[in-house]
Image 1 (cartoon, one colour):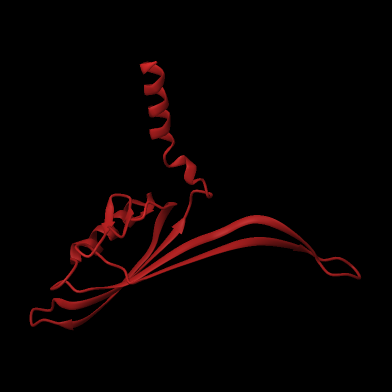
Image 2 (image 1 turned 135 degrees about the vertical axis):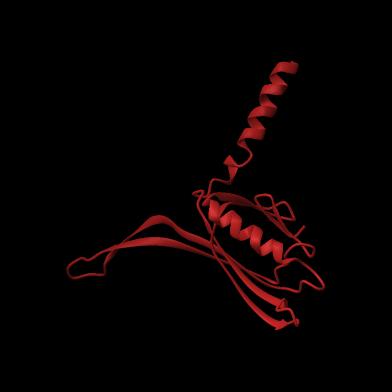
Length: 147
């Protein structure tokens, strides 16, 4: 497993990405002042986005159904936890955009090569600690009962 977005698993068998790009921004407000530089104030975190790019080769690795699944997930409007195969938790993300480019076609019109770009946007305010809270609370209750 390379990464999981909700219950969707990125892997060679489903959809493998070759490029992972993350952009994080922060907000700084400015107030004009007479006779000196503007006053600046840190206003907090701004957008956090991840873009996954890759190539799907249905005859060798991956399936078209994977792209359809991601489109279905995006249609729900829900946000999904994003967890790397290493165990790193990125937080909760929604699917903003999915694009694909099909090339090298078979006689029946099926593409041999599909390049894709998946754009995700973080919506959890940086609270990755909340993802495991239900499990942690359940574990604490169970420990209390066993004492």
